[in-house]
Amino acid sequence: MKSLLVATGWNFKEYVQASLNSIANLIPKPDYIVIVDDHSTDGSYEIIKNETRFKFELFRLDENKGAMYSRDYAIKN
Image (cartoon, rainbow, N blue to C red; front, top):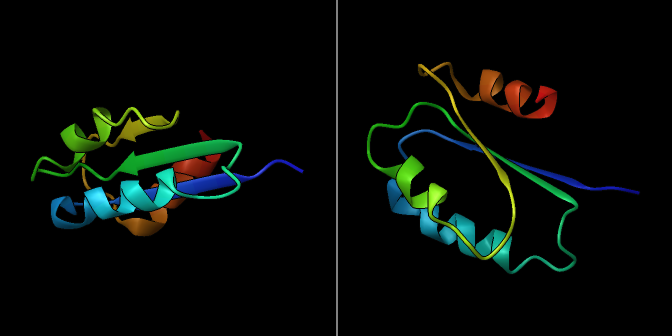
């Protein structure tokens, strides 16, 4: 069975490093990791974009659409 981890966020710079650390320390690792930035303006996207400890797909929405839309976007893409 394949596993998918979906992480979404908006303007969460203060928490993004702790979130990335948690993902990096998961055992076992998910088969797929999808991260959606909901058009953050605080630098969160740039921090995530520079993450190198694990492979993931990163999407950035063109405008803030909310948590539900971000999760749906991650699953559909």
